[in-house]
Each structure stands twice: as C-alpha cells, then as structure tokens.
Picture 1: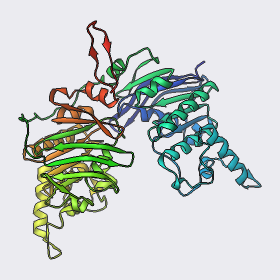
Picture 2: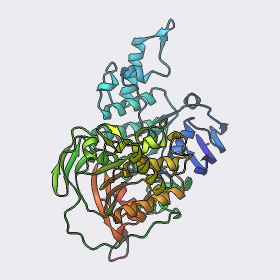
Picture 3: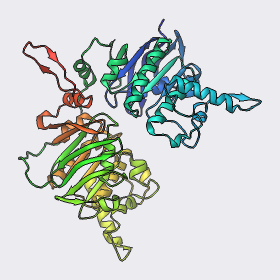
Amino acid sequence: MSLFVMQGVSKRYGGVRALQGAELVIEAGRIHAVLGENGAGKSTLIKIMAGVVAPDEGVMLLDGKPVSFASPAAAQEAGIACIFQELSLIPDLSVADNIAISNPPRRFGLIDRRAQRRMAEEALARAGAEDIHPLALVKDLSLSRRQMVEIAKALARKPRILILDEATSALTAADVMKIYAVLKRLRAEGLALLYISHRMHEIAELADECTVFCNGQSVASYAAGTKTDNEVVELMIGREYNAVFPARTARAANDATPLLELRHLRWTDRLDDISLQLHAGEVIGLGGLDGQGQRELLLALFGVLRGSTGQVLVDGRPVAIAGPGVAKRKAIGMALIPEDRKTEGLMLPMSVRDNLSFAALGRLSRWGIVDATAERDAVERIVRLLAIRSDGTDVPAGSLSGGNQQKLVIGKWLMMAPRILLLNDPTRGIDVGTKQEIYELLRELADAGAAILFYSTDYDELVGCCDRVLVMYDGAIKRELVGAEITEHALISSALNIRAEVRGKTGAAQVARA
C-alpha cells in the first residue's frame, strides 16, 4: 500500500486554476521529485499536503484512509513536515527555541531547557549540522546556516513524510553534499521524501521517482533516469500560448553608446560578475528560474543594495547610484517597477492621485509647494494613457483591482519620463486583458527611445516581448538569446543550465550541460 496518495486534487483562486485533477503517489523509503516551471502548481500542491490551504476537489489518502488537514498542525500531527523555500525561523530566538517552538519539552508545566537543548542537538546532528550551537541566536547565523536549522526543525518533529521545497537553494556546496547524505540516510530509515528542485543534477543524484507538473496538472510520472533532460523539458513546457504580443520593431545592429552599461557587478554570493549593455529602444529580458539573482540585479542597479561592487555607466559615463533618489534623477532617469505592488509599489490607503504623483513631487513643486494644477493635469494624462479604471482619482489605491493597481505602479514612474525602466515581474497576478495593455505600453516606450530591462517568470512574455534575453543561473548570466533564438525550449534548457539538444552524425540525441 502506498503511504500517501492524491487523486483528482484541484484548487482555484478566483478565476485562476492553480491545480486541476492532480495525481501523486508517494511511497515510504523513496525520494519522489516534483518538477515544473514557475506557476506549474508545485507550491499549491505542497501547501495542500501541509495543511496550509484546503483543496476544492479531490481525495487524499494516508495509509489507504481518506484524510483532510484543516491546519498545518493537523498535517504535522499526521506526520507531514514541510520545509518551505521561505524560512519560518524567528530571528531573535535561539536555535533550540526555534527547533522546539511548536512542542517544547516541559517539566512541571515549564519549558525544560536542558531537554530542549538535547532535542536541538539531536535534530542538528540528524541534519548534519553538528557545528551549529543550539544556544546561538538565529539572527547571528548566515543564510546557509539558517537553512540547516530549518531542516533540523522539520526533522525534530519525527515526520513520516518530509517535503523539501528548494531546500538547497541557500546552501553552500559543502552543505549540499551533507544534505545529500542526510536525505539518503532518511530514505534508508523508511522516510518518504517529496523533493522539489529546479536543479536537474540534484534530481539525478537523489530521486527514485519523478512527477512533472504543467499548467496545474500532473502530466507525467516516471522512474528517475528513464527520461533524458531534454524529454523532461518538453514535458515542462507543454502548455498552450494565450498571449498576443505587439510586433517587434526591426532593428539594425546597434553600435551606439549603450544607454546603460554594467561591468563586473558583484554582491555577496547572490550576484557573480555580471556585465551587460542596454541600448535605447531595446527590451532586454532577464530569464532563468525564480531566485537566480534577477531581483537582486534590478535592486542593485536601482541603488537599493548596499555593498555591491562593479561599475555602472549611463550614456558611457560612470555613475555612482547610492540610492533610489540618485537613480531617478533626470541625468540618469531610472525607474523600478517592484515585484510586490501592495507592499513595495503603492500606499494603498492613499488616493490614486497621491500614489501617481508621489515619485514626481519634486518636478511638480516650486519652492516646496506642489503646483495643484500641474499635478492634476499630469495625473489625468497618466490615467488616460494607461486607461486606469477607478471611481475618480480621490479613491484609495487599495480599492482598485489588481490590474489597475499595477497600472498605478507603472504610471507613478511614467510621471518621471524615465529613460531606463527596470521591471520586476510586472504582470504577475493580473488578468490577460491588462497584460496585453502592458505589453503594448512597453513596446511603445521602447519605440520612443526608452531602454527596458524586464524580468519575468512567464516564458511566454520573454519570447513575445524581448529583443534579447539574458538567462541567469546561480547569480550569473549563463546565456544570451537573440531574436529567433528566444524560444521557450531554449529558455527552459538554459534556466536549468542545460544546453539545447544537438544531433550528432549518428543522429542520436545528445544533451550537454552548460
């Protein structure tokens, strides 16, 4: 009997289908890998298993008996532990406090500190992290060490099923090798492991079975090693094309001075020797799977990150962008559309007018006093340009739909007439119609002379919108795709750090690693 089975599991968020009829079978003493591109349904799948969200349809079986989890605590009680990509540790508490936080050992009604420390030491040893002191504060640990504590915390619950969501993404190479050994030992002990990773070499090293998700559906399950990397890529990208993109403007080879040039940018271990050129009129995409340094690159260019090294040139002249205030100056003319419109892009309780004019107040003011007429005219122009739908400009930004909120974020920076536009996944979570309007706007801005650097987790957008795509992996640019080279297959292969399939003289398919 299989340990855990999901049959016909579906989940919708409004009109968005996150999972549709998903099937999954997990065996004890096996490592089951789940693969799929961004938005394929993997995160929703593990949230349902972990009791974070409830499915709309379908059945889950544990030891052959139907189960449903009303909360994460219920899933943990059933023996399911999950290590999410976003850490759940409390920085101001000790390692031991974090490991035992859900069920600390007690004596006479009080927390037994000695027993808690022994519990933490045992969990850390089981995770291969004996070098971490149980009394150390989490905030004093590096990100890699924190990830090891997160793994120890999950193992301390003595689970029957352990879910790992990109659990090695923040680890050093040495720690990754330790985790390999730990997971293989746990498998030998009879634990069932569900392993989610974008790193194909990890799947090859660890997995016994694999299931591929695409567009919210489980499209294939197979024994590890029975399909080539190229065949897996084909399964991952098998989705229909829905978007209609504006025609690209034909451009001759550009020998002019780049509007923006970046030389040898580095920042901690997240960005590694990045160099690029961006000319006026170009839309350059940033590809790669989520979390490969794309967001950090945009933040570094906009002056948000401290401690970055390298040289930034605008119009061929070196500039020191010490912060966003410098980046948006007229001589540089840079704007950043952030990833999270609700927390980073807008002040939701404030009015549409205030949100639109906020970044440009310096240009709309004289002697420290806002020119109300100029502000009104500028706001109305942006509202018309972007077709922002609202009950006037005095209503709170939070009352608008998600798509119109995203238009506000873009409109706020268009008030500055930027020359260089940095976009961080600008169409995530908005409807198809609004996406179409944003695609057309980006092309119009580029045709008017703006230079656009555009990160998207949607490969359709990169294929349809961009003149060139720079594919990132582990904080570095691994490949540049130009023109007809920009295909979804090439993007997926490059994102997984796999070269495209080539044919030898014998006609046999060969896949080379980058």
